[in-house]
Figure (tube, one colour):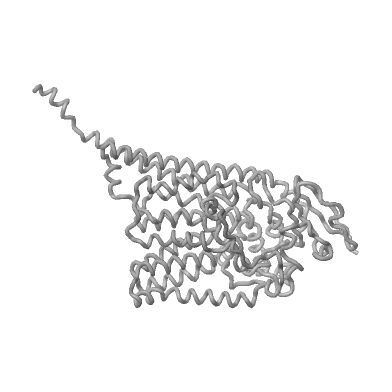
Length: 537
């Protein structure tokens, strides 16, 4: 045979293999870079709106500043409220307090929320690495951070979330290789987590106990392994007993405060996947993205981790999803907020199949090529979906910042250190597409100008600043649900200097009618109005 022909036939395959290897490396590196960029982009969302449409965030800001003034003995409200240090919100408020001496309260909370978001994603990635899971599933860790808990402004819950993941990681390590040192670490970490948030604490401890039951069959080993969780349970009992004696609402018949509500109906079947992306029906637009994330490990032909303990977090989320009530102990939206953990718990179950490494490094069969392109396609679709979701949040937050700008002008017309009443007739924000965005926005007056605004979170048991006995307003949450029920005498109208009104349209005639004081309109900006009590007799 002609040697020239022989050379053409026996082409050296090394360059082709190198080419495939480089392509595989690029395919592995590019999604990782995009993941980091996407997570960093998510951190920007907290800073777009000066006063974000996160429903409860103004109340938490007001608590922190009220605590600061009480500690400095400069608060004009010392006869009204008192500090409560035995609270599961201690860490969240304690971290924010020193930052308020360096920056405005809004910036302090945003800073901590941003750090908590980064810490949550990073802790999920770390636990996934510990479990030897599929790195491509890291994309499932970010979207839920901007879902139900974010839009409701559950500040302390979001601050506790990364610590919850770290506790779960520690509990898994402890269950895998039990030791006294690790058990003591579980106890200490659990104690810290308790003072971050009670619900995250209970959720993480339940998973830790589940790890132990999944790991040990011997009764003796099981009892010994559960030892670190016993004092944590006693801590919970102590808190419950103390709560019964110090609850500001104890002995008050308050019809607008629900003590327990099961809240089970067929809507719950789809609730948690929707709440991954938001808190209203509008979030259902992103169900295809959530569904794709659920399908991804199967499309990538991942396998369930051989360590069967990895199923416990998803089992815990499922129990929360279908068993935990809507309201308990006067705390609402119990199961909804755990949508934050849905996708991470699901991702923790999987690890990449072993053959994937050979495919990435150049396997040339047609089936592996098809599988590789399918895998790239699924990953590209998830990346695109995440960017669409974050872009949607960006647009909505920017529009809300413009829509809510009139609140700045109202606050500029007020004096510091006055008591005010929050009268929100229209809670919804068309710009942010939220049905409750304006619910507590006037609490920024308390947070920024050292006032005191009702309805106030000092009404509730877990808060770090609570009403003293006998100092609760006559019917605390009544006007929050329906401000049209305001009655001057019944609601002690003379005790308020300012009335923050958010309403599309004028107030009913003679709304503030009384024989004690004149109430005048100070300024009207868009749907916001500021009224002031003057010339009392």
